[in-house]
Length: 185
Image (cartoon, rainbow, N blue to C red; front, top):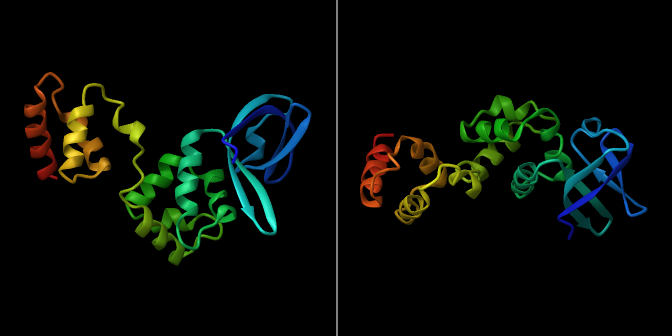
């Protein structure tokens, strides 16, 4: 299993780029091959798709794109060839927001994503898309976050109220303030 590859883009196709790494050309399927400049060096995060009749590499410029892609292909009825075009016209934030808000119109604008598949994506992923890194963008709330998670609150809900909690308070008072904010939602 490959995690990433660093190399020079030597070729662009309609849905792939070829990366030269130490004299070996790797064909990597990407959402937008023209976002890569020829003869420029890139680090591309990879997903290896292996089946009995296929061995393909799917690549992403950012790690958060790869993480969302991995969650999408775990949804029943969504494979790599269906999930990859979502990143050509949609952003990670836009896709995540559409799932959280149950925006079927946004999701069905992507190729091969019909109403049934969009509903399945929402059913499987709503409330599960907040990455752990996002929770700790506000310093000093690691302990508060841990306490709230142990009480059964979702990471996404916790992240939304953190900016409204006073960081200068003791952890006990932060918990009280956070619970008031969570219960008022």
